[in-house]
Structure formats: C-alpha cells, structure tokens
Amino acid sequence: QTNELDEAHKLLERMTEIEPEHTSTYLSLANVCYMQEDYPAMAGAAKKAIEIEKGNAMAHYLLGKADNGQGDGIMCIAHLTKAIVLKDDFIEARLMRAEALLKMKQYKETMEDIDAVLAQNPEEETAILLRGKVKEANGQEEEAEADYQLVTEVNPFNEQAYLYLGQLFINQKKLTEAISLFDEAIELNP
Image (cartoon, rainbow, N blue to C red):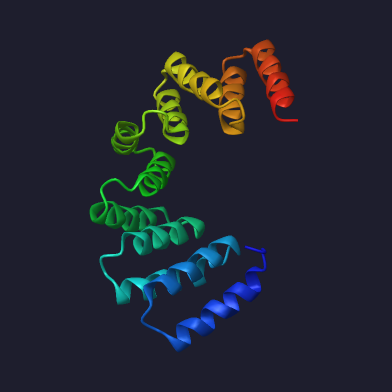
C-alpha cells in the first residue's frame, strides 16, 4: 500500500518459504511482480499457486496476464481460457482474452467474449471500446464511432475512448472533428 514494491516482494518471498502451501501468498506475490513488470517471476508465482490449487481461477488469470506481459498471446489465451472455464463470469479474464484475440484478428472469438461481458454488465466501458475496435476492423466505422461516443458519454474521463474516436476521425480524414474532440478531451482531462 505504501508502494514499496521491492520490500513487499522480499516479504512475500519469505512468507512463501515459511508457509509454502498458502495459495494467497503466491497470488499476492504475482500481483506485486506484475506491478514491478517482472513477468517471469509473476508467472513463477502463479504456477506455484496452480500447483497448490489447480482449480484457482485467479492463479490461471494471473498466469495469462504474465504471458501477456511477455508477449506470448497463444499461452495468454490458453491460461485465460482455463480461468474462464473455472469461473464463467470472470469479466477481467474475458476482457483480457478479448484483447489478446483482437490482436490476433480473431474477431468472431473476440465478440463472443465481449458479448458475454456485456450480458453481465451492459455498461462495461472496456468491452464497448473493444466492440468498437472489432467493428472498425470490419469496416463498420459508423457503428465503431457510436461505441466510442457512447463511452465518452457514459464516462467523459475515459481517455481511451477519446483516443480511439480521434484516431477513427483521422483515418476518415475528418480532421476538424478530431481536433475538436482532442480539445474537448483536454478540457475534461487537463
């Protein structure tokens, strides 16, 4: 909590030596490693948690997150899929898997995760933005614009929505709209 990540990491390492069978300690260690951007150590902690508790959805999610941090999209998707199988309503895992699938241009599969998330939470901003990115990739620019606009209306402080919308306007050669949008974003988020 005091942002002393190195100290937290050392302390959690000692705790795993003292009580090597506590899954929660490994999950905490994996989270600290994520904040330190030490993805190999994060993966190691998540794997240890899985050894202790194979059915722990959070451990599989963290392993997928570590894979993502290391640029391994295939393994990221595999571990996130395992997390989702264990916990079907795991929104964070579905969103991360949708992002990984989107990077791989697997639009149908991306939309399956997005639809599942939006069925649970129709106002989930990240899912709406991802849906917009899929629509944009499929040439449905008006629908993509509507999704990005929706997010700016729901949350005028969502910077990603403004960036996506501005980039869409630039791609459409709507430079006046893009400049106006960026000015508006700057006013809202100085």
